[in-house]
Structure formats: C-alpha cells, structure tokens
Image 1 (cartoon, helix red, strand yellow):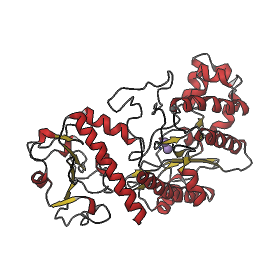
Image 2 (cartoon, helix red, strand yellow):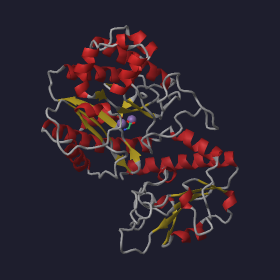
Image 3 (cartoon, helix red, strand yellow):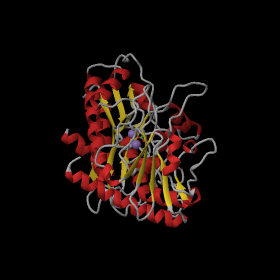
Image 4 (cartoon, rainbow, N blue to C red):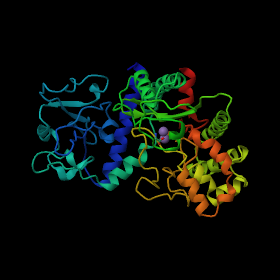
Amino acid sequence: MSADLSRLYADHLAIQRTRADAALARGGFDHLVVPSGTQHYQVFDDRDYPYAVNPHFKAWLPLTNTPGSWLVYTPGERPKVIYLQPHDYWHVVPQAPNGDWVEHFDIHIIRNPDDAKQHLPKNANRCAILGEAQSALGQYGAFAPNNPPPVLDYLHYHRAYKTPYEIEMMREATRIGVRGHRAAERAFHSGASEFGIHLAYCQAARQDANDLPYNNIIALNEHGAVLHYTDRDRQAPRPVRSFLIDAGGSHRGYASDITRTYAADPGSEFKGMIEAVDAAQLAMCAQVRADTDYRTIHLDAHLALAKILRDFDLINVAPEIAVETGVSSAFFPHGIGHGIGLQVHEVAGFAASDAGGTIAKPEGHPYLRLTRTLEPGMVVTIEPGIYFIDMLLDALKDKGLGPSVNWDRVAAFRPFGGIRIEDDVVCTEGAPINLTREGFSNA
Ligand code: GLY
Ligand code: MN
Ligand code: MN
C-alpha cells in the first residue's frame, strides 16, 4: 500500500475502534470477539464449499482467506489477531502475517483451531462474540457466538458510513470490475457464448468465480428477463440480439456491483431504449445527495421508467397512471438499489437507528432493500431496469390491466430480454461520486 493508503487504513482502524467502544457499551460487554469463520463441507462428503469470511472480521483486516482465525478487541488495548496457520501439506495454508495491517495488531500464531482458546479473553460471558455458530471451539462449544442485538444493531447501522479507506477499496474493486466488463463487451461483439463471455470476464478481472463478490449474471437475448440468471449457455444463440451483464470485482474484502446492457444492432430500437434508460439512470445517480430519502429515488425511478415505456409505446396510459396502477412494477419489478461495501447487499438497509427499529418500505414495493435517508459516506447502487417478463405481464391481464399495455410492442421487445444499468455511487457533502462511471472513463 502507498503511504497515503496506509494512513487511510490507520484512520479506518481508529474508526472501527471507536465504533466498537460504543457498541460494547451499548451491550454491556468488555471485549469484542470476532471469529473469521470456518470452512463448510457438503453433506456426507469431504468436499468443501467456497470459504466466505465473516464480514465483521474483514471490517478490520484485509484478510479474506484465513479460516479459523480470531480478532479480539478490548477498549483501550491494541487489537489482537489470533492467526491460524495450520501445519498442513494438503492445502495451501495462509502465509505468515504480512502487509500493512500487521503493525496495528498483536498477533498470535496458532497451529490448531482449538488453540485459539488460550489467547481469547478468560471470561466468555464478558464477550460480544459475532459470527456463525460453527465458529465455536472444541467439543463443548466454547466461545460460541452470542451475536448480541444491541452490539450488532450499532455496528451494522454505522457500517453504512464508509471511511475514506473503504471508498478507496471500492474504487479498486470497481477498476477490477471495469476491466472485466470491457473484455466481456468485446467477447459479446465477437459472438462468444454466455460461458465464453464469463471466462473472458474472469480472465480480464483476474478473479475466479469464487473471488467475485457475487455470481456473474451474463445473459444473452431473452435471458436478460431473468433477474438473477446465473446459468451460462455454452453456445451462443442465433441471432444474438442483446447482452445484459451484472458483474463486479472484489478488493481486500470490498465489492463493486456493475450492470451494463448492450444491443447487437446499433441501429435498433432496443439500443434507443438502452440510451433512454442510461440517461434516466444518470439523473437518478444525481439524486444521491445528503438528506434524500432513498425511497424517493425509488419512487421517482418508477415515474421516469414509465415515461420511457410510454415513449416507446409499450403502454398507452399516462406514466403517472402506470405507476399508480402497478403497471410500471410489471416492467421494473425490483428495488432501485441497495447499500454496498463489505457485502454486495450491505446490511441494515432498513435500520431506523443504531439502536434498532425499521423504516418501512413504500407500500407495493416489497423488493426495495434500502429505506434510509442518505448521508455523506453512504455508498449505494442505482440500478433501474425495464424487463419483459411474461409471468408479471400476464398477471397484469389477470388484474384487468391488460388494456394499458400495447401487446404487439411487448412481443417486439420480448426477444431482447431486458435492460439494467447499475452504478455504485458515493453520497458526499456535495455532488455524488459515481465510482462506476469514474472507473469506465479512467479505464
Ligand atoms: N448483482 C446483484 C444486484 O445487483 O443487486
Ligand atoms: Mn445491485
Ligand atoms: Mn448488480
């Protein structure tokens, strides 16, 4: 890391400590104890699932592949890492601790998971232990995570406010994703299959499927209408009309989440609709400002997308009516976005405060994942879409709303699947920072 990043990381740790101090006080505990998590195995088998680190662990440490390790923080003391480095010649074991994080922690190397116990606080009852049940030690389940709600509520709520270090990590995760996206676009235009495009993405991002922050969505033609399409056909369809790619990158435990949609024919109406959604999406990104209720961005997006539906003659009612009657929801059936950071879908999207409580979703919008008011430091995605999903469009007919839709136009667009455009945007004191657009223009 550069000297600047080292300083940002040190500042980030100071903020983690301050937050942990407050969270422990809320819960009445003396120590924060965070297991990194364990390897999980397939039932009746010795095959392991990809390891996923506990987000509370990687909030402090840029370590995403050290199962069986622990972080211990006691207010007023240097944080401690109990670092599992097993003697094992079957697998690659974690390297000896190295990197800029090392100087900030007292480090204790252990060779067996159960040896963590000798370095953990004496009295487990005084510990807030955050993690999965499987992290408990030994046959009596010592140091089983208790996940106290007051501690979790506090930490999860404040995690929405990214430190400058975290924004830099997400910038790099974006650069990685943009490299992949550029290669995927080239592969699409050269006629590759979904599987081929996926491989081109991973190669350019230099990340394997398990390194990525979520499963790539690589959808040609009608597959763009399946919101979480993660099959990958080995053969390209003929003809190829459209390409929707939702794929990110990971950097030191932080995620980017990026979607682009392309038309094979640059003169097609579908290409025109992509451009219309892109312009609307940029206007939505500009709404990412302090004191804006994120629910407003979502509701405004429905109106903006309904206008596009009207302009392209897909509906024959006024955009306001399409929103009121739920017609717009058949074409745009997901939320406008979510918080992002250590997790692609960041926690505490509905949190009313750092002591609990829930901010309701707008009625009729069950899939919105974030209802908080934006404040500087929050990073959110903005991901409007228009899709042609038979199941949802048929349901409009059942509700007597069939006459609002121009079905011949739906039939013309259905073979293209759908459009989504997704950027990651930082809320600041002033103008928002669009990490994704910045990444594409600097690539
Ligand atoms: N990639 C999942 C999402 O956009 O939320
Ligand atoms: Mn997203
Ligand atoms: Mn996405």
